Image (cartoon, rainbow, N blue to C red; front, side):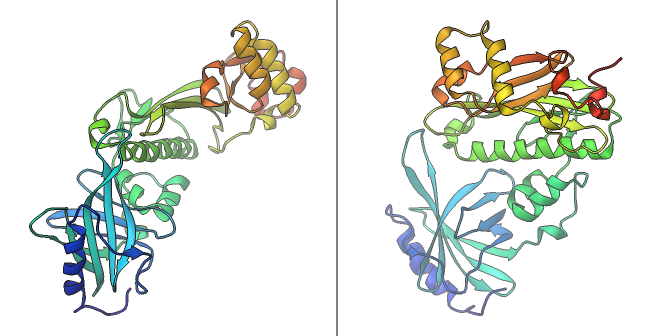
Length: 364
C-alpha cells in the first residue's frame, strides 16, 4: 500500500521516540509524511492486538481489542517517520497528558515501528496491516446501518460486530460492550428487526465514544457516560413507535440529555414522518397545540421559555395520541421540555384518513 522505505524506519523511530519520551510530547511537526495515507489498520502493539484509524483531516484513534475504548492520537511527522501522539486526561477538567508515542514507517504489507510510554526504558514493537472491513464475517444480521458502519467507521464496526444478548422473553436485546439495551418485537419482520438493530447500533457506538472521552477514573463512575432508556409506546398492525431518552456526560462542561421519538412502518422498517400521517399538522400548528396543552403542566417561567424557544418537536405515538416533546432547547432551560399528548380525536382533521397506516389509529 505504501512506498518502500523499509530500512529507514528503525533509525528514524529511535530518534523520534527518544524525543517522545520527554514530558514535552512526542516531537515532530504538523502533518503527515508524503508516503502516508488515511486508512484503517489492524495488528499488534507488543503482544496485544490493536486496531488503528489514521485520519489526518479528522480524528485519528486506536484501541486495544481486549478493552474496546478508543485512545485519541495527534498526527505528526519527524523526517520521513509518521508520529502519532497519544494523550489522555487524568482527571475531569484536566489538561491532556501524553501517554504514548508511535513512530511508524512503511513496511511490506503495511506499517511497522514502535510505541513508547514517556519515561519507559524500551519501546514496544508495532506491526500493522491495512484492514478491509468488507472482508470481515458478519456476527450480526445484515442491516443498512451495519453496512454503513462497516464502510464508514471500521473501528466501531470491529467493536460492535459480535453476538448480542437476547434477554428472556425476546423483547429486548443488550449490546455487551456498551450495555445499551433496546426493544425488540417477537415475530417482527426482518426489515423491522433491522431497523431496531440499526437504532441500537447508533446508540451503542455513541455510548462507547462517550466513555472513551472521559478520564480513566471517570469511566468507572456509573453517573458518567451515556445511558439510554428506550421503550415501545405503540404497537399495532401497521405502526410501531418508541420513545428514546438519553442522558450523557462525556467530560464536557455539564451533563446533558435529549429525547427522540421514533415512528416506524412495521412492514418495511422505514421511518414514518409525522406529517405523512397528519399532513396538516404543520410546525406552527404543532406549537400552538403544544402550548395549549402544556399550560397546566409547567410554571409561568417555563411557559414563557416554551413560547420563545419551543419551535421544534420530536414525536412518538401512543394508544391515546401523538406525543410532542420540544427538541433543541438551550441546556439551561431543558427541564421545561414537558411532553404533551395530542388526542387522536383532536387531530382527526389533520390526519390522512385514507392512509392504511392512519386507519390503525382511527378504528371504526
